[in-house]
Length: 167
Image 1 (cartoon, one colour):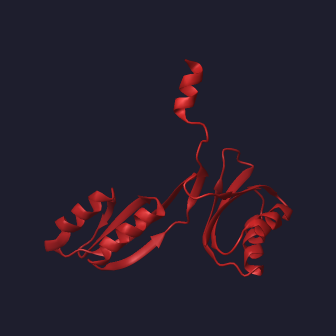
Image 2 (cartoon, helix red, strand yellow; image 1 turned 45 degrees about the horizontal axis):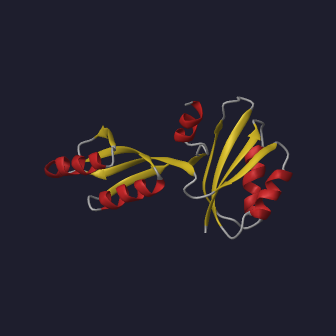
């Protein structure tokens, strides 16, 4: 089963290495790992996507690491998940219109057009990127790169509840 874990840490040298090596020591394969600053420049947020059984023990071990401030395992459907992908596709002149039409459905942007290829930028949920790739495979994928997944928990308060209270 795939798990998505956010780890908020102090922005210090070596923290990424300690976190990733902790997963490796426990024989977990990391599918995706992203790190970036938060609203506080003294903190960074790591998003780790791993396959494995129950994550309770991993969460406990993460809290034991120096510089770890908060650990959250995200429940599917209760978080906003995004990735970015660049994919270069074969694009013969007679099929370019067809390829661009297919890309439009996924809101993919053509960011580079060459003599024989088109490079697209696609941003969205991981499943949406996978669907785009399936369509583009029919044209021939020349190269591909994806970012790691980023995740942010959804706001638990709905707008309708807020509006009712203020009314």
